[in-house]
Image 1 (cartoon, rainbow, N blue to C red):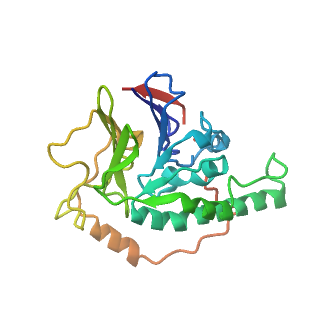
Image 2 (cartoon, one colour):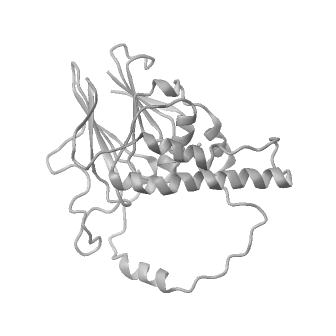
Length: 271
């Protein structure tokens, strides 16, 4: 039996964390625990505060983490997970790992600056205000990243394997197709963030196909609420991008408070 618990991106569009349990008893307390994405909550305070909550199982009990792409709302909580005791592999495409090696230390640095600002001006109810994780802690978590190329089937346990397929979102972005074997085999497709499908006129590029190939099927499709009620535009994005690049940048006034990098209800699904 496979049991999915949604720890983020449910009720909000950030903090993506999907906990997949594969076991025979259906309790979700034993068996293989796999986390798909590990994002940070952003936006309103009620969501940001969830970044300080622990995952519902001990971090060291999570077998591995499968990462779809390098945006903070999908990868930004990884240093915190490692801080809590996770020591398994973080599987991601090579390009996603390259981006995370920049984004995660930068995230830690900004959180340290944020905490320092609040401590200096006494603007936090916490004394002292602390960062969720530091630049150093973000750098340390990178040792657990393991590259997996698109289309390569990776066995993560006797009962579970996965492969990455193109998502056409950002560099290295993928959907994670997870196969659970047992008395009844199941194929689960976690979309991550979905980009435009390939079209020679409106979405040119090297991505020749997005998602599974024609004829391939999934028993369960896990799609976040960001993309549940919209279609991507079919207009050519290149003229709009050119306008943005050519437009002179305006000076940004200094803010009286630092920019904040910065949480979703838990629900579950059994299959």
